Length: 168
Image (tube, rainbow, N blue to C red):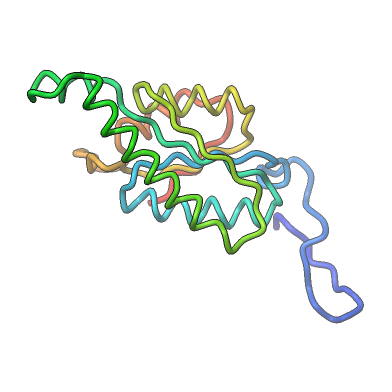
């Protein structure tokens, strides 16, 4: 059992002690990586629960996929800068929505917009913020054409220096 419940004087139960060396006990900084997919929405709910339960700071990151931006610019009449601007605006809207979903909780939240390959961006932010746990959806907005995890999720799991919780 991760947490022991100790009765308070008013007969309400609260989590007051955590077993040493368990992942959630050590969590002070949690990173949620979201791309607007259905699985990301589920992962966001889990990240909020864990952050609330452990009183952790929650970092919410969205990565603008620069390889996709370059590809879109080549396939359209828009410049790379114009495509990037659209992706950044959409990312900012997405981050605001994620942050707004935390308002009813007493959480310390920071949003981050990164520009890179998705898995590289998530891992760079995780390292820079020295996070204790990454929470991510099993498949992103591209849908994960294979059974199981999407390729970005798989790269994050394989290359992360901290535990990764994959939500399906």
